[in-house]
Image (cartoon, rainbow, N blue to C red):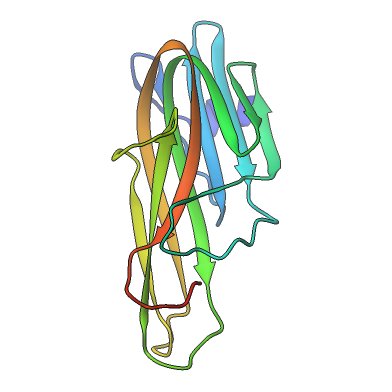
Length: 167
């Protein structure tokens, strides 16, 4: 996998920063380039079915798909990042079978860094319940620089519409 990512998926952008395109519906990928080489972690959400509401909630990425290196660890719904620069990409699919009316449900996604919601990496999507659009995908990305010893990163989601029911 490492050679595939280095040679095919990660064109070098600028001074050791890499990017990748992962064709996965629900994922979070964290990539860092350190002096010794590329380090990355890709995780999927295959079991967290928490209903998104108007309260900002941390969602987990329960299944590790790919990983290389030790600069990125994951525990308790948070990524722990060592000192360095990181490209963080995430996407999450949302869907409902409820078509009782044509209400619009809007979902916001955010990165939380050391417990503070960041504006970098924000995402949004909406569902129009009976308009034939019962699913949407939030997708965000950001480059962050961890200058301290570590940083904890999590993804949060919330509804920003006035519809009373969750998704």
